Image (cartoon, rainbow, N blue to C red; front, side):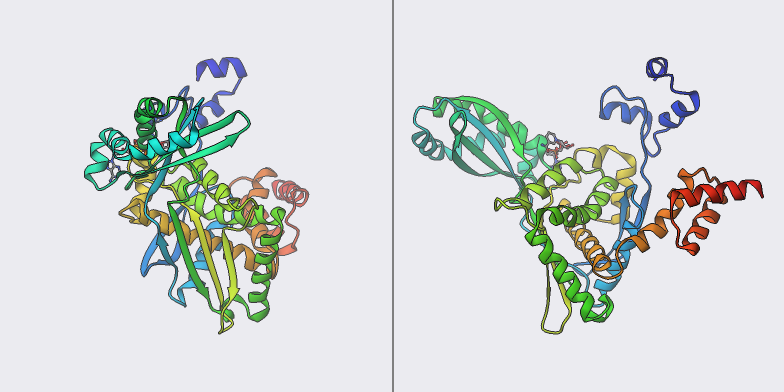
Length: 404
Ligand code: NAD
């Protein structure tokens, strides 16, 4: 930090703030990544009212955006009336890819690899007796032949049950271990040996029914269905539709120490799997006129390994959530994603999101206009009352209040 201070002229006070790593002791931070100078903390809130597969959860969410926790809690409350969220999953199967080039007879190599499947799976499983003892491990072998700009490639894929691990390290180790055998069998050259983040064998499927009166009547239900149709037809809208889902998913992921890049990569590549970018949720009106939402997406999360295990605050968040397996965590995250999407679409299709959002954002605007202490709430509530939640007005109010 002293070197950074010297190079950048960072004042002592700001350096001290940065060095304060919140719920993460400095020595742990130092072991997690390289060149550590400090930490940055997001607020963690608790979303309430979540009932998932009949069980109640307090859901920790860490993010910087106001109104997300409130919206999730409100949506979960509306879903409770009709039983909450029902979520199923496909099991924790991840894919490890091995890239083989310079193969003379790609189709012949594919057959040979499949012919020695048992041997290849054994080699993979020998790397992780712990995972195998828990019922996980490499279960299946697929082989693809790809036509690429550099000629044909043979790509054997290990399908690995990663249990309660997100699984990237476990799968990468297996992919690397089988590579020499794959070269020997195919006569080609191996380059990449790595997990795929398009985790389409590790899906969660969440459903919830929202009572039409709670949603705001027939017009509001229709509005949400039309909003979905818009996203289904237009990638510009769809990106924002899916971003709304990820507001919930990623906030829980950050709180629980998950690999959020892996989750984002999985979500958006799954959304584009047909060649067109599509919504991760669908919305329709049922025979009663109630609103039915469904979410389907990959959810590669873990409770062993990664920050979920090493970050003390993440461990505490997982305790609050009370999930016992990675699959249970994935199911709750799916419910939160669906709830978040519902809340955003309902607001957008009715009063617009800015009213609720800006009310909660008013305090941030007050702070950025220079308000401190009690003045923050005074400035924020005045702006809400005047319906002028703007930086220029906040600045005027700060000046007025500072004089008085
Ligand atoms: P890990 O290797 O730390 O832990 C997994 C291991 O824990 C297993 O191999 C197994 O031996 C053991 N284990 C003990 N109890 C288990 C249980 N109940 N279920 C399953 N395994 C159990 O972690 P990981 O999950 O293999 O890797 C996750 C990390 O990899 C994340 O930090 C992620 O950021 C990182 N990573 C991601 C990518 C990517 O997504 N592309 C690439 C490289 C690394």
